[in-house]
Structures are given as structure tokens and as C-alpha cells.
Image 1 (cartoon, rainbow, N blue to C red):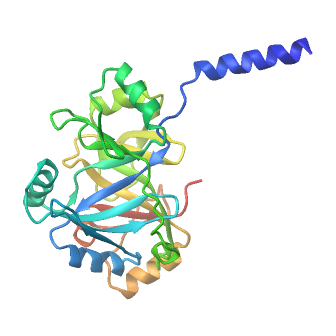
Image 2 (cartoon, rainbow, N blue to C red):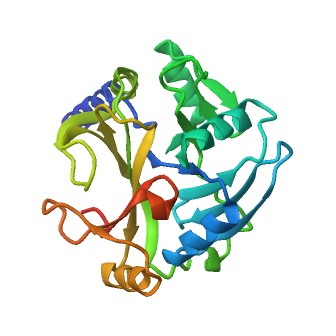
Image 3 (cartoon, helix red, strand yellow):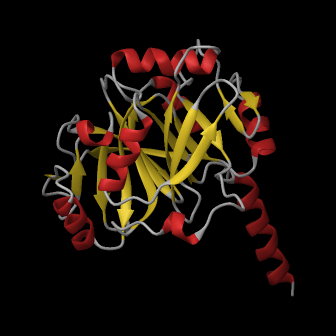
Length: 276
């Protein structure tokens, strides 16, 4: 019995010394578009089912590409700059469509707030999300709780291209992100980047349910996203049928398919088999 109690004590001590993983995976990315109706049609052509959004009090309109695990691509537009958020969206549209921010999934917001406040990060709480002030290098990042709602129906997840989840992002590398990930106990390691147009070397932050690739000298906050599909054959059939341009990936990632930004409204989309 004594040895059993000793083992429990050692296990408890080890667990106490290991930071709990507060950031689990990806949340969603808002892709800012000039013409929401056209963007919706183009994403349908890629084989995505679309869930309707609504008009917000500040004029923002949106639609959703949703997945069963709560990850999401949000297509969003703002007709006018009437507050800080819409002003950022309008500023983005002046230089072109695409994401302004990217979201990571942190289900335990109180613990995350306590951890980051202790480390001196200027975290803000805005409804169900946590973000950083506009004058800080971490501003493009926010933490969400994944938007699963009672209005989600099976047809919203019935993607013709067999998509099942959003599992990776390629984002601009900054020292602030490395510091944040280190303080959160997230492993960051050098990695070769398999892609058609980005830097060949970068870093990868490994999360329990996803990956964030950090791209040196990137010109945008968010460059690319990975959508996992059950069948690449089905995906390619849909893209071919609807005349969506495809670009094959590097040999280091056989079979993956990339759709370039002109067809995906400012972001590279990689379609790949589920991560092993």
C-alpha cells in the first residue's frame, strides 16, 4: 500500500509541475470580403455548405462555413466604418480581401485570463472572446470558445467536398507570438513549410487539436488555412466540376491540394487528409 501511495504522490506532483494546456486548437478565422454574395457563391463552388448569418447593429453581414467540432471559416463584410472593428475591416478591404484576425480555441477563459495576466499580457474580454489591444503586436490573435449553437443543423456540415474541420493556420511570425506560446506551455519547433508560395522554413506551434505555422517575413497576418477532408478524390472532383483552380502541394505533403487566394478571397486554402 505504501508504494501505491508513493506513486500517486509522485504522479500528482508531476501533474502540478506540468502547465495545463489552455489553448486546445483552432477556433475560427473571419475572412473579410468586398462582395458577400459573390464570396458565398465561390465557397459553394469549392464544395462548402453555407450557413446564413445576419446583419449586425454596426452593419456587418456574415455567413458561415461550419464544421462539427466548432471550427469555422466566417465570410464577413462591413459596408461602412462606424466603429473600431468595422474601421479595421474597411482598412483591410482597401488593400484587398482576406483575414484580419485568427482565433484559437481556449475553453477555459478564466484560467487563460489568470495565466496571461500573471505574465503581463494586456488581454481584453469582449463578449465570448478574448483579444489584445490594437496597438500591440498580438492584436491579430483572439481566443474563442467555438461557436456551437442550437441553430446548427446537419445540412450545415454536409460539405460536398467532404470537409470535416479547420486544422491549421499559417500566420505572420512575430517575437510576441513566440513569447505568448512559451508562457502558455505550447511547443514551438522549427519546421520546413510545405506550400506553394510561402517561406521554406518557419516554426510550428503544436496544439492538441491543430497546428499554427509561423511564417517569417509574411506580408499578411494570416496567409493560409488547412481544411481536412475525408476524401481528396471527392474534393478534386468538386473543384474540377466547378472549374476552381487547384495547385498541388510540395512532395513533402503528397496529395494535398491548394486553392489560391483569387478563388478563396484573399487566403490560400489547403485541402488535406486528416493529420496523423
